[in-house]
Image 1: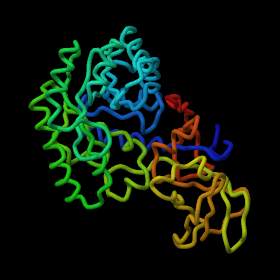
Image 2: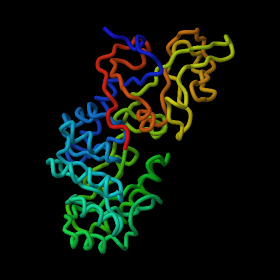
Image 3: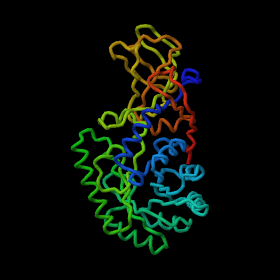
Length: 348
């Protein structure tokens, strides 16, 4: 039997019970094709296969590499690249997937992206509409024109896509719901002009209040993170970076062997996992540096295993080559390792 404590730290652990419960909760609300899991959140085909077993066989991807890896793993029944692509060489890689039998759809929001998709032999598209997040997506008033242009280029327009990413972490639930409704009204109006069967969008933060999309592009719900956890959603945090205390100043602080190169910090510092060495829950992360996280408030000794919960799981997982599935992530070094899954969708 392998224990988490047998692994070289820093190392990522995922709680199997939390994973299964989170998937079950989401699947009950968004069964089958009503959920298009976004693999950018976990970049792991083994985890994607677990979602396929739960009935979710259409997937959302952010990179060409993710699309290729999913198809190679036999999960290419319905892949959406929810991103614009303008490099003919990269588009050609997607065209090769189509020729090999995968179903590939890409997002388009300009004449240029339409031309690249058509030239590469990618036959299906969604018109990406700006619904308030200043990133990708066309002006809603241009959606119909772009749909006509895509059809004239020989493409099938499956529908529309719009991502209210700026609303995913709005703390007040009523505000999140009302702003999502306004944002999705823009997408619904565009869909009425564009046509097609698909309205794609949303995410973990709006899983229960986006009533417009026919398929929800959620991914982080599988293991959650600190930034989402503060919203009070019915999904538990299941990912932990297990570290080792490599230097201790008793009564002052301890230095752990996982830092910025093992944790994403765009959403803030990680949190300490509940630990019996913490005095009345006063343990805290002081700061993270390249190779270390400095913590205080506990009675750690050199060599102790210490767990950190990341504030943002998507880019944290992307920093690692392996995700270890364990029976109880809170057990730290004593957790039993059930499986070790390659994080095999990294890269572009």
